Length: 218
Image 1 (cartoon, helix red, strand yellow):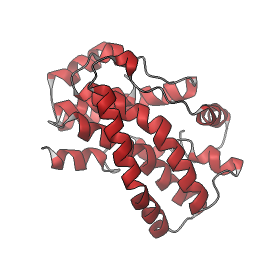
Image 2 (cartoon, rainbow, N blue to C red):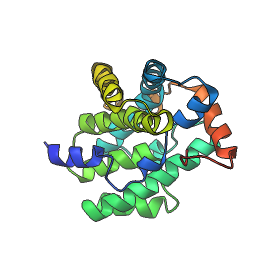
Image 3 (cartoon, rainbow, N blue to C red):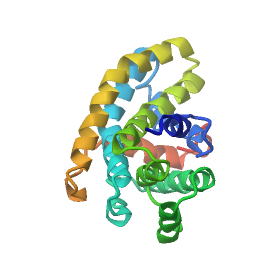
Image 4 (cartoon, rainbow, N blue to C red):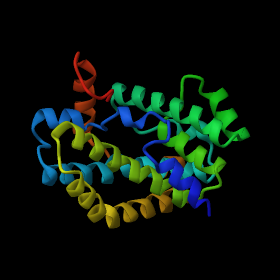
């Protein structure tokens, strides 16, 4: 159901602003923690099981029709990451309202004029586009690794074929994370959604925000 819409939503060319963000990869590269394909894969794996899981669960819950107001208390400790999430949510909502006009998107825009968190918007957009919670979770999990991987190609000049192969090998774990996210989301209690933490990503976000010269917005 809605496969074409899912592909469009997950396409990096969809004008939601994600291409301008590295998901912490730029700071990880500068710190030396990410320096080649192997270390990039370790970074992506950690990101998938923390940020990716939380985002996927929130997206699935929103796609299941749960109250966006309760979901928007997203589990994001870093002020810089919260600001980035809302900015991306605002950009995604703008693009989605043009692609899939829907009363639910209009309500979300009215309720959060400064932008709801990106994962909540993603799930609401998925609902408007006729996607299932499982598809919303998959899109969120995919985004959690695909964007940073693309950033690593630009930052380090990695072989794009090797990066694509790394993402392909990560696909089974991505499916597992998406399934766990859906299971949690369909429980119906926003307070019981995953809250996996990634403190180093929070630190990176705050450091990155202070830089005067950077390639990516986050």
